[in-house]
Image (cartoon, rainbow, N blue to C red; front, side, top):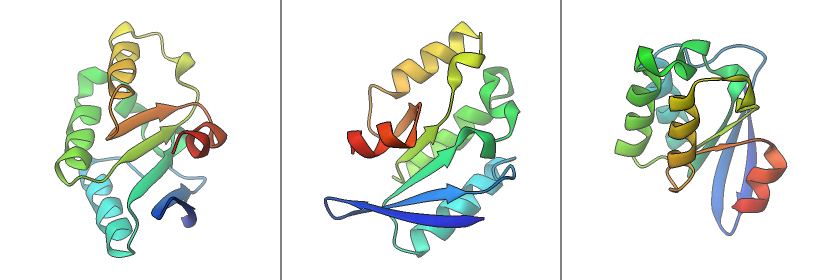
Length: 117
């Protein structure tokens, strides 16, 4: 796992780079969040491919549990990927509602992330 640093308006953002699934459980997410926070970052960019597919099946409650932790500890999270592959209407609504706020966002590209910060 590599951490690439981005900075915008004094905000330090960690982009997680890996070819492996990093988030398989809520504990994995907490470990990552703690590691990033300890290194002085203010936000995390995580790619869709680094999250277990179960996260995107809302019936598993994995997404809710993990995103609740990011919200509770006030660590903004941006998930980058192609979410059009999921046909679940509830997931599409979940993404839509998340994107209305600032704590958890789902965006399609790193360029979109960097342009919206």
